[in-house]
Image (cartoon, rainbow, N blue to C red; front, top):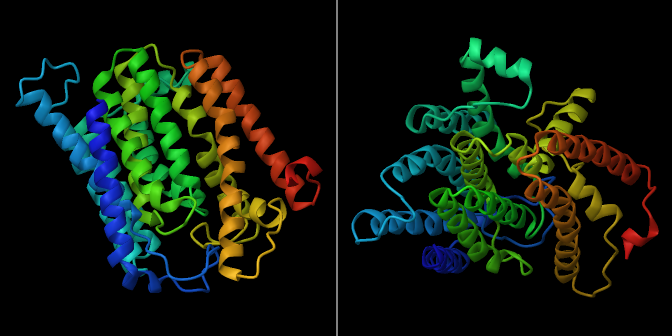
Length: 367
């Protein structure tokens, strides 16, 4: 598992470096008028291609190790890993195409992530065995299509949730890395080494991308990176619960409550204003932190000043993420407690959001 992670890290690092060197002609397509733009200059948005390369190569080598190279089979990676790659492909290619052209409409990207969700049902036979709510479990048993719909919604929706929080150097990438390692930790606790190997390799490939993304901001993940993280983590979360009865279905829910709730809350606040959920804006939680909490940086070079403020934003959200990851990892089998932490996060998020909007931020957060 360790050597596969090293390979994934090195492949992603090298591919990312090549993109930084040769991919700048595609960066100019992301115009200065974009509301999510918090940087100066033209930065390649093809970091997702590097993550995909690192993960795909390490996964493929893991399969060869398990099936062809005389490995005793401790990882048990087999042909089913190819099905994971097929599930990942539509969403990944759609995101990368958008990063290169900035012309792929939201509806087509939603369709492609939906295709990934459908493939997850067909190729991986994913299902939701339980939810922690007896009434809903009974309903799913009587109507299996409900569980199938939840799988498609999770695999199609989580990529866009990661895309929403992908606003500053190191933010979405570090969240994805932390979540992958948390899922891998619990997978190892229940003896699911194959799933842990895929997740650790993905985390390593993400780390290779982060070498170029944080703090220097020389490469962005783009839609492709967000979609790759979203699909892999969604499929891994459902698989972990489906394959291991001891794991609560609310464990991955608490792990991912930050990007999930950010998406739900964004849809709500746009609906209240009569705006389509597909319209980009600059009122997400991380964007408010950038504007109203991160202290100004005094520097003569405007580009340097923007970069430094950008870099100082992400650690606030890393800490916010750890507030959910730590209890999720500690209580991964306790459904009631995980539900309570999810509710606590939602309340805390809403209170923090409105406190920032109303300029009622504690002074210690500004330092």
